[in-house]
Image (tube, rainbow, N blue to C red):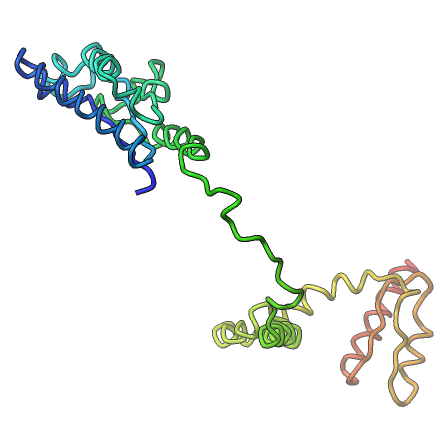
Length: 263
């Protein structure tokens, strides 16, 4: 492994520290742990992280046995014991549990030991901030020199053509979903994306000033008569008309606006 993260002390106070014999056995195990951590750092060049127990919410502990043997005072003694026997010094980095659980928010521990995920996020951030010097770094002299790739060597003509094809499909179908939205028109009374496009943009186009309008072009000259009949300042856009029905509607609309202006 590249990193070893360890912690302990809470359950030790409950299960292996009741009698004098248990205490001596436990201290021997702690000294052995400190020696192993030191050997990992010196002989195997493996960084180690030791996490001390968080703040204990004594009143929230579930049983009387826990409140008597695993309260905050007993766990604090266990933190001091691990430190005095060399575990903290043997580890490459120590994350102090009470530093991110604290005394002011200890009541947020629902069972006296466990905290919400946001507390452990803080502890994880402390660990990640230390990784830049905990993890070994390669010697710059051993790294291969960086050679930048040639311009265009990472491109693909086929993928470029595919992107252009997708863009043309979207433009042709008036649909950002490459025409797939037309499938939904089967269930929506035939309303297609091109209809929605005209419904969305026609009100905007109608507000274009007359000096930017295109003249009507239609055989027979009747359209030219309509263009000359529009009153000055009229904001009605003049577009290419494809049938007599549309032309008639435009005549009626223009007559109504001229009548309203005369009133």
